[in-house]
Length: 256
Image 1 (spheres, helix red, strand yellow):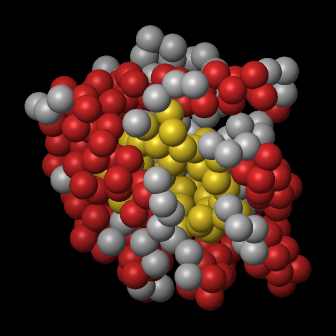
Image 2 (tube, rainbow, N blue to C red):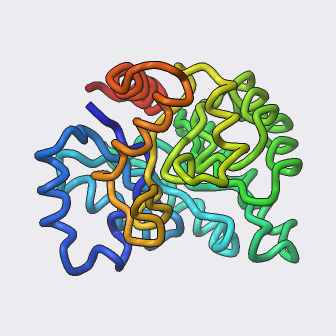
């Protein structure tokens, strides 16, 4: 059994075959998917999709690219959406300095406000962090966010930061990038942290693993991620699938 902890099946990349693809996934070894909100619109879309499809759960949150949405009204909207019975986390939230560092203060404000919302709702968080390791870790420590639990999504930093994140109480999200030949830091991080702190994710339609790099990603490709983690850990693939499935259930506090 495989649990895709981070997907975006509401994305327009799936408009032509969304339902057909989810049907196909439902017949595979993929047993659960969490569809992740990235702004107010996609958070609503994620909730709607989860309510429509048994295999799905949802999260609600505002990605740093849309940090301006995190106003009083935006927080209230997220609070309302989080009442959905299949909402399992607040996310994806965090910092992204790859595209825009000029609004770092706005991003930090949005990140902190959504961490507090997660605390109010007793939900874990999905942390997006790109080219912002120092500020991300500072905020997570400052807000004691590790007590909420959750995941550092699409992890891209050093083994040292992976271990620090695990120590705080977070899981590490590993997806297709781990299969890339040049993904040295991610491979080293997988080797460094316990399997009990790893969860699988696609971030689809993005970041498809080799040999599909550059194409549309889907949960059907997670077997390639499982295979690479098993190779790096020197264990069998079934162990990777079973343990990461349990990890995801624990992280999101849901039943199998």
